[in-house]
Length: 161
Image 1: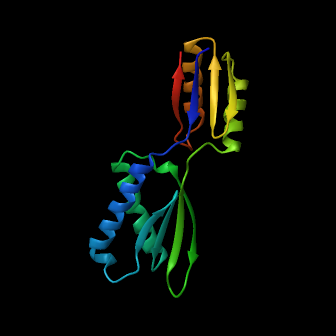
Image 2: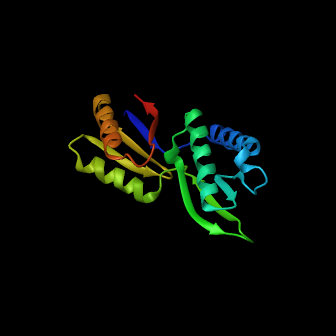
Image 3: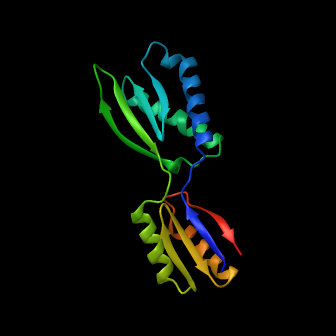
């Protein structure tokens, strides 16, 4: 029975390289000299530290540019709120999304069930497996998922015929 998996996975190696390149640029840029501007990657969280909200926005812009150059979709970032830490410094945490959340998985499953395509969708951990009798049905299910979900950079893998 033909099937494929719908996944939400960022290339963490490319994300790490983008964060390191951003840190390098922060160290060499004139407008960041003498400030506490920094960026680091811990597990799947990118921690941005700066002196002001404006500086955090600049660091985020540099990070987005580096991610785009590394061919990583910026929609993988889930940017949190700006928090004040000691003194006049501010901190922001951006999580790298990996794995489909249960709410999105249910939305994809109901979307497929509501369509006229003869396929079945099942939620398996952090992915949605779609199975069907014909390859053409699976391809139309892929097109349907792509058309409906613009908020998340979903990809399809493990295509079996």
